[in-house]
Image (cartoon, rainbow, N blue to C red; front, side):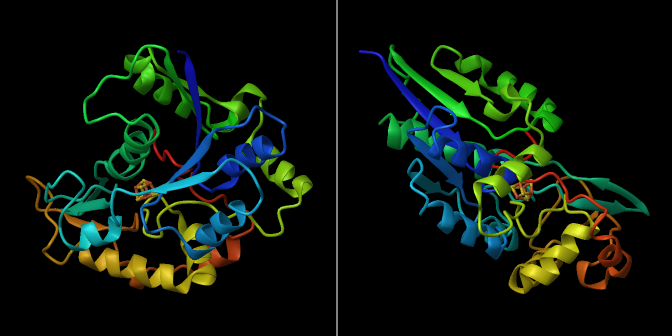
Length: 280
Ligand code: SF4
């Protein structure tokens, strides 16, 4: 028997919210489920927005998790049991600043969604093959100005092409992020749809750090806590003596001067949001 399961990767940011609401309002074919992979570390406005989304009558929203990412960092562990940092923190060594590997996307986002699809929705045991006749469509809110991310997703899915296919409703319609913002305004979302990303994501620029300070003081304090944990000794960087920082200046977050960023807030763009598949 043929069965097709249609899943939306919901990051709860601007683009994936647009796709969700387009599906909810019948503008595009709907989804059986929208899956939100929760690192436990999103800004408060993202969780409030997610609760609002659950009330609009769209596809059922499933929240899944691979753990609380910041707690794992503080405990000096990661989703695979290794003792090294999975977020792309900045590394300073002998005056040179680089950026570390990012594994958080795979461990806390991609793998969490894959587990829901395989185990909960398809009822598979670990490593069990998807049976013939089952097709899964995974949709992503990738806009036309981020088209490169779709290439990486297609590549990642190629080895499962027998049963898994990606879908990019915004790309298919040539919609940019600005188009999404306009679409959301026309839809009548009663609040600004926030950027989705962990409060301590090192990909934030200064404007985004200032936004966090102003809109989510608890999230800001959490980011400072995680920044300090990175240099506490609990965390190791394999084979390196580097110090780790969340801010690209390689300064402790609480000591960074953001005064010019606050002035420039209207002109600068935030970092690319996680959108349920940051960095793919
Ligand atoms: S938002 Fe940043 S820290 Fe969080 S999972 Fe994505 S890349 Fe990692």
